[in-house]
Image (cartoon, rainbow over all chains, first blue to last red; front, side, top):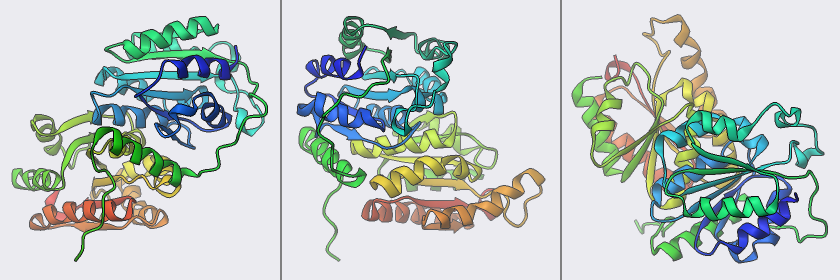
Length: 202
Length: 166
């Protein structure tokens, strides 16, 4: 199963959701798989932060559906967030974990899931995220997207994807600061709120 | 902490517009956590480590709400990775309120590292901070931290020490 094909399936289901995603090649893949969601997506470059930031966003905007596109390396970096999400029970948070069993962006050394022993969905269920599943086909993944985007409790799907990257895709040129401004202005416009307002005159 | 100091913290948080607090409990702020939990205007999120709390606060910032990360100063060390990435990489601010373990007067050997590392870690991350040891300065320190962080879009910190927490 290719991550890019899963992304295209998920993208078809998204319109007014907000997306936070992790680092590496998945950034450029999402940029191309979901062009209509570029402003609504916060591209982050860090391990272990994505689903935690998504929980914060979900807590701050409880009426809005938040999608976290996390990774096997990122989730294993901070498993505690699964327990926190379980205890907080956000009813607007859908988490996808792209599990390619490797640290792809640095050339592909294995993550812990490559051993075949480590099951992130099982860990999530053990942490209290009861609706946590693993998908091996695009059809399975798409079914979980439909359920996860409609769920009134935290929903997690681990997508077992190959370590290949979609070839010949457009690279995103912006850095983390520009990405943040684009995302914040999108949230401001769609929520009719001010997050980063003008300075005082004094 | 005396009840009046707890009240001052909560007054400062509310004046700064905070509606969500992430915390990992510690002993010096022992009285503060249940008061935060009980406050109807503040949602508390208990975290498994302070770095996770920092990242959640970053997400709250992006939502337009205001959050604070409340913790012992040892939690600063656990937060360095997400703070560096969010603050220096993207300009996503987190305001921290920490108890000052390990300052002069500390009587626990295990807390000494917290005192020795707090200011160098804050300085390494270029995070401005204020150490408050008088109750009447708590409220202003918290609102000043928020004013600065929402101008700089960078982290700031208030450490409560001295007779405020002992």
